[in-house]
Length: 245
Length: 248
Image (cartoon, rainbow over the protein chains, first blue to last red):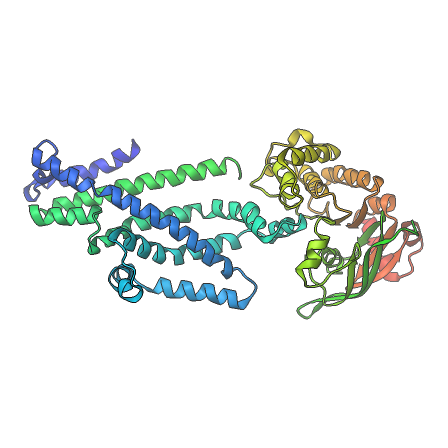
């Protein structure tokens, strides 16, 4: 409810500039406007599906890359550093183009637009996830490792039952940030033709020629998605904190 | 007591942290069922000594044998002593995201392969021994320091170790909670557990210890039965130390 109140001034402001606006393109009371709106919102499914798939992959890869970064052995740490530094240095848009147009030539595997997008997003995000996990795991005190060792847990069980559950609670806000980031970055996959929110908006702009109104709606679409994610992450944090201070 | 076998044998053990020598040529035997209290000023190497016994620290020179297994860099030696040595820490080190019961059952289930029912049964048994069975479903932060340390003792006991190590178990506690932890430790000693305890609680040492060890600057300076060392210390360093401790 509070959120709607916050957004209200924005709507009023936009509605107030009626002279230069042509809201009719997205006016739900007209057939054309309602169709346009429905067309725009139909991209949400792909945006969400692509972002969620990508974040699940990037969390998994990120964790697997973070673990050697915590090793005492220099060689393992070097593997972690190399991955993070290289992947982090590639702009997402470039990575998307490279995976979609470059990878088939290199490997003979042609990915469809969806999987090319997911792969590029996940790869790019995994470097950041690796850093988040490394910091989170490093924030767990030495005493927890020693206690785990003193009851003879092996490395896998120590990580699985003692260290990671505590680390994940601590990095939850950062993971939420990455999901928000992912939702926004997924708009770039529109350049290879993915039918997500931004692509739909672009297509509509071409036929209706009202970029101002259509892109404003696009902004609001992302805003709503991201507010939902924020609320979800906060709910999860509260739930986890109720069991541990 | 004298004809019992040695559970722990340390021979000429040395250890450095950078330039600082934490242990200098330390030799110590602990027999089955023996209670050893280690004391000494901070930085004297007493914590390092017991941390070497369960391999939280690795020694550089000398030999350590625990229950007949020589400790070295192989995973095999660690595997063999796993479950043999229990440890209680100054800061308790309970797992904050798990309930008391889950803290106790984790090791037995994952390491000893007990079923959930068996592990719970065993956990409740030891919670009763440390006199807090009613706290089983609470989280560590909901307990007092003394209760947390008793849970930590129970967590170690659930692995049914042959040796229990205590690293200043009452140093982080408020004064009124020290007694409840020492009582549990005294009970444990009466049951015949082999114990090595690093502590400044001299009353406990007098009551419970078979052997007193005084360390200073990484060396064992004085060693003997408590009634002997307290009444007639051989070294001036130990004499000065107990005078300080008893007069504070």
